[in-house]
Image (tube, rainbow, N blue to C red; front, side, top):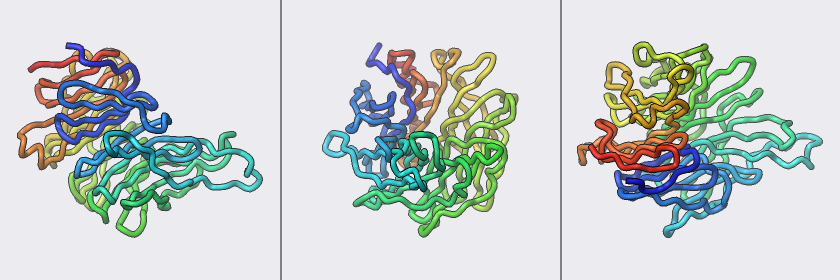
Length: 354
């Protein structure tokens, strides 16, 4: 049964419950799943939206890029409303007349309704001059404010993902191009961001998820030719690389969601021969490939985001409910068995019965 249309790339997703899921569709559209159908709406600003997140109490925020500065929108009173964000561009000597390039917020994570972090990058000036550097912004319940990132700011750097454990334990991961591509991680301790070593090897980290202060996962792309994708784990003391599924090669991972120490999901795509969307699962011992719906396994398809209802709700409901987004396709519903969900195939959303 065709429910609705999704003609643009689905790049971000947030799940409040199995009947309340939001996705970023295209540059300026947001889509809502109510358990029966998708409904699309335009962002308040009409600007570019890149990510969306839900607070523990069900509040919703979307972030992206507006003219010359980061974009933040809040779901209030049944509609999206743009909220002012701080200007973060660094002025350059002699370049005062050159307008800034749009700054972009790539990711957002909420500790609580009055404690939210959004991260991204300042893209310098519109003529391509000036530094491109990481930006971190914080919502305190009343306004957004810029907070200095711990990244070096040398060359080109930006933040791709953020995950919140508590008000005194927030993580962000990104990239730095200083001769060789490298990833970096930084941790907020309640007072400031500080760099944490362990992710600097040739790779780009795109996704981050937290189970607890001693259990975080980061995923991305290895710079090695035909690499297996980057998977790293934080155990409370250090980051260490974790092998992907046996025989994994030629793949990249864009998103990760963690329900417990023994239940973590990562999504992305395989490139090269036989390329298509992929799903990987961590069972507490090792990563395994999970079969994708046959529609998503088609050549050129990918999953770019994954979100999960909170572990508490999952235990209470006894269900593993996810939302997955990618180019022209998304999945909402229990991942195991791939039943009672919705899959966007091309420009159609179809319901899958168990």
